[in-house]
Image (tube, one colour):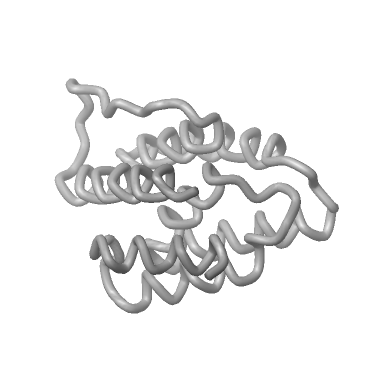
Length: 139
């Protein structure tokens, strides 16, 4: 079984997909981009997070398509884009973008205690951190 398939199976087994659409979007990203030279576990975590809804999925799809066409070798440019998108946020979505950046940088991301984050956003962050742990455990 390929790493991509192991990842999908492990996340499914851990019941970390919110619904079938979340799983399908994640699988599409993995099918298209897991073989690219810029693919990392950090990017995989971002894919899981972006697959949560259509809006973020399409942002990720466009970014990865451009990276693929530009023959990118790493996620450096994606990191710059993530910083810019985070700074544009005026809602608690800022924290979701900061989590993505932490995934790309392969660093822990503790949610600030004093942050004014809606419960649904906290839930998405918590699920993404659980998924990150599953992804990190894969060989």
